[in-house]
Image 1: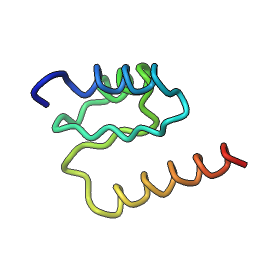
Image 2 (image 1 turned 90 degrees about the vertical axis):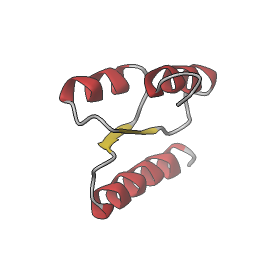
Image 3 (image 1 turned 180 degrees about the horizontal axis):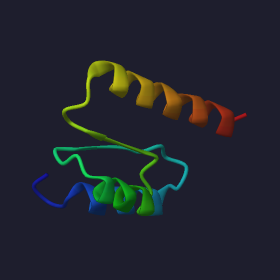
Length: 71
């Protein structure tokens, strides 16, 4: 990202609207980065090398969470 990194963007998005569901995709597959991402407001974290099923599952979980929050 040319202006800021994903953690900074996640932090700003979460700060502006805590109800926004955030799935952070990273080129790094790191448990430490995943913890950091969730600490700044990401609801889910995947490496960009994740297979399609993992991405689909993460999106579906976030959508389900968002649907329950809106009820």
